[in-house]
Image (cartoon, rainbow, N blue to C red; front, side):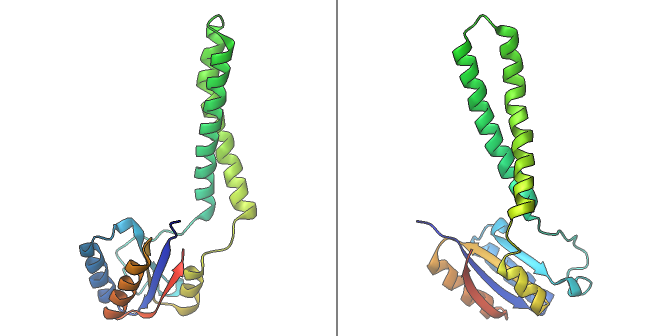
Length: 167
């Protein structure tokens, strides 16, 4: 069973973050597994030239719901087409056109609703950032051995409070 690990550490200097990021990329860590988060109170101090984005857990649920809706309604549409025979070609055209589209819209709406009503709070590393301030770098990995290596690398570049958590 593959579990993800999240290695995280705080930095107080932008240059150390840049060097750490370059080192991780050189090691072969994909960029989409590395996040650099800045505390709200420190947004004007670090990485001034970059645009910030806020994490949205609700939008992810909408995307998952839309994908599930697409799959379910596409299968349902295919089943209707197979069972109805060739004599109803005009009705089948509407089924093929609307079935998956309705599924995507309905699934996206239900996923959005699920995310708004039942989503958990922010992950613990966001809470750490809110409490501690500064810059928090997180790196996801599936390997516990790689997690230990990443933990050492972050500490080697000056990260504080480095830890490994299940992601």
